[in-house]
Image (cartoon, rainbow, N blue to C red):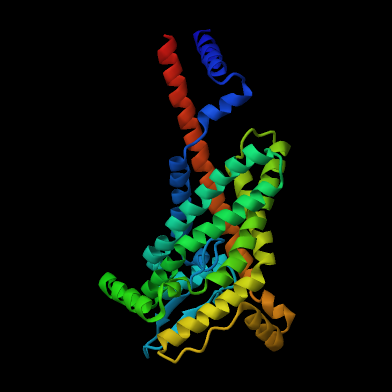
Length: 342
């Protein structure tokens, strides 16, 4: 009886403060800092899963450069693995279990700031667009996803150079700083954004399609299971499905980007004279001429095997983090109200 009176008193104060029961949700809204923490945790969890996802996890690409006994670099491309389980078995068998986390520092250098900017910006932009266009507007995920991804990859693009060098060569931070200074002195500041165009052509459409389908599926599943907010499994399922759709449609741009990056890294690692950079359209025409139209969709199965779980883990971890902070905010407000009313 006393507990019911307490709950009624809390609800009374909530309505008094906000004016209506529907608006009381605004009391529990998480802050940008809490959104950043949730996205940071998601990035770390996804990155800790190791090499099975780092190649193409919906947020970034990674190509590991290693050396064989003859000190000649070779590239561990996604095609070496037939799937996630096959990747785990082969990596552990050949390189040991610790190798699942090799390259983690450069991975986190890219993953954490990129994900924090990307996901926090998406939620903030969504709130602004909802206030302008209404919460049921289907264009909101597309606009918020595209703008937030464009902003995050533009800000983080110079870190791609740092990550690549950290993975391709055993450089100290002092050597890395010297290399970056020399690169800027030789080619100008724009050289730090090398590869920006093909990344935009792949990541922005990916983001637009991903968030559109994710929000749509999440809403439908919540309605089906009568859930007021997405559960872990609803977020996981929606993230996997949305990531698969977006990855399939944007695969040609991913193939082009991988082709151009691999070419650049091979020239740098083997100390060969680098050819003039070709446009995305030129690379596409070359791929079609050599391998046919299906060449643009090469590696679709390995990519889906990597992208779908990674997107699912990232978004479900993020949503779980946000749910945790909403409950935390609710508890704080209830304690404050109870303290004020007693």
